[in-house]
Structures are given as C-alpha cells and as structure tokens.
Length: 131
Image (cartoon, rainbow, N blue to C red; front, side, top):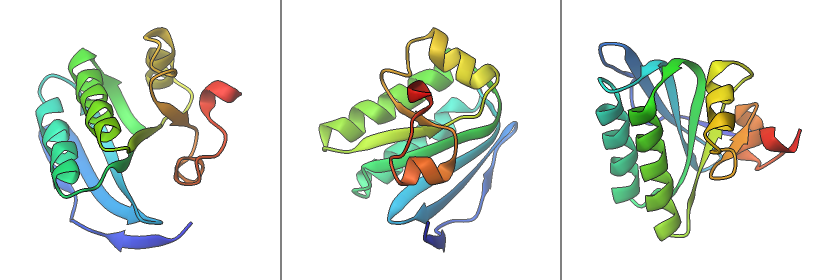
C-alpha cells in the first residue's frame, strides 16, 4: 500500500473529524466520532467536493465511527450514486461491531464493497460479505 500523504489537514466538527488522504491514487476519508444528523452534512460536502474534483474512486473508513444514523447512511449512499454515475465506486472500511451490524441489517453490504481493513479496500481484496 502506497500512502501518498495527507491532502488536507483533519477537519474537526462538533462530534466528528474527517481526515482525507490519498493511498495508491484513491481518496481515503477517515472518519472519527459520530456520523449523524449533525455531522452528515459535513461528510456529504467533503464527498461531493471530491466528486467535483473528478475523484470518483473513494474509500470511507468507518473503523473509528462510534455512531451512524440514517442521515449518515444517506450521505454514504448519495456518494455511491454520484461515483457510479461517473464509473467510480465508494468502498467502506468497517470492523466487527455496531456499524458493520447496521450495514448488514440495512442490506448495504450489497450496495457497497465493505472491507475489514483499509489495505483490503485499496486492493479491492476480500470483502466483509465474502467471509
């Protein structure tokens, strides 16, 4: 995995920080905190901004997200739709726990490629649903 460094400094919001960097030519959004009604507009804006710059292959790392609600899911689904319009994809990284359980229950494992590690997501390796 080739980490090309940070493209921006971490952005901190009330209950969420977003750290954006590039790994092997793919934009990675590392989220820490809660992705909910208060913070999802910031995530949506960051993902839309990447799309407007022509970045349509994105990874959202949810391994440090403690809480995810329907508005957060909506931001991720919207990003996936935009990416697909341009032949891209949004991959998610999630570890075992409540976030991965939510993705399973909502059927989003069929919508997103979900991976257990950033490395697997970058390489389009083994998906969580494949386990």
